[in-house]
Image 1 (cartoon, one colour):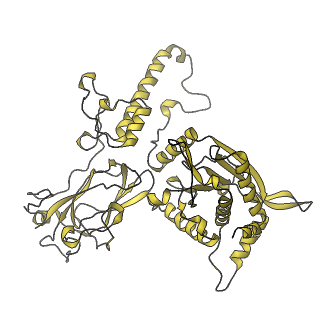
Image 2 (cartoon, rainbow, N blue to C red; image 1 turned 180 degrees about the vertical axis):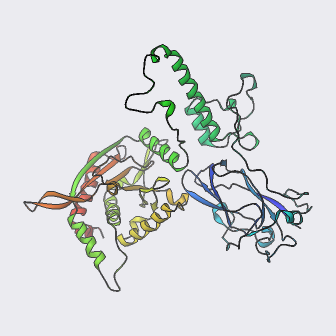
Image 3 (spheres, helix red, strand yellow; image 1 turned 90 degrees about the horizontal axis):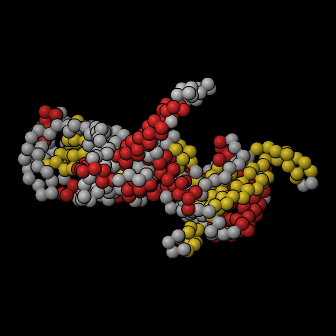
Length: 477
């Protein structure tokens, strides 16, 4: 005897209201254990594997890969209880979460994890015996054989409705992002037919309305300019594609989140940039000596980025103005006590900024080890939203792309970002003589509301001094 429980997309934290299904990890008929990951979703901040709080047989899935679902939308249903005639014990994986204390996975608010059970399949002809008529409070009753529910296809909906059919009731929207996007493009949400559950308006519906409005405006403009365009060749001689041939790529997921944050930074923060060239020869020599050490006291290899991160924490201790944020509503500068150092990492999914927590309490080796760990998680798409938020200062090493300089965009709501170019041999005056030295360009972009150029210049000069003479750090240890 079994009961069917519905598992909905949980609140993933950090204010996220929707997620896109990237990959299903189970099929209909699979036996799942409590807290076993069942689907991989992509939010605006990270790729997350979502565990199911129930153990039993998957009877239905909702949503194809690539579908965007709001928090609270159904993900799948699970028949909870030991099915008759199935192979294997299945007692742990099929137990009722209420009788066993339930799931404990804290990712979705269900507690701690449990070991994943061996993946088994229940034949469709046995699902009718697995799910019987068993009224349970708070759970749906299934009286017929359970088969795979039709997969949710992205419906083709009519975006704009007639004037007379505009609803006067509440607008079915739960995502603040969807409402903001509609406001930015003057889209009347009451005129949209939602493609989500119970007519819920999703971001895809607003995007579709925006495209429709743009296409209508473009068609109108072409009609007005038709006599002029008739005299112009259809394609330019150099073969440049016209707007009609252009590819449209939705700004969503990590790319959309980055676009929103960078746009907000440029809109809200009055930033300024200063830069300086520094002789990094001594810094490279110190790194080589540290990594060449052998014996019991020798630690892990230290990267240049780890050394620069350690220099940044020392500089922020001397110039705390740059480790702050601005509360625009209260018109106050909030100076932060701890340094949570973000570093830019380029991945296949786009640019992400993992955060090294309490970097001010770590030495170069500890910072380097944490950077390596977070970088590996970023490459595999397994960073959690918590590991991508809460930074107070960002270090951006764009020298890995083979460029010397840049003007970084501040990672909102932080107050500054240090950019580091490539370290390469250049002619340099050293001890009064021309020599070939390892030179790097450092650039600091800062929020002019939190400090003036003198403070920013002092910070950057201190960083450059530590790069040129690493022994300067000993004064702050």
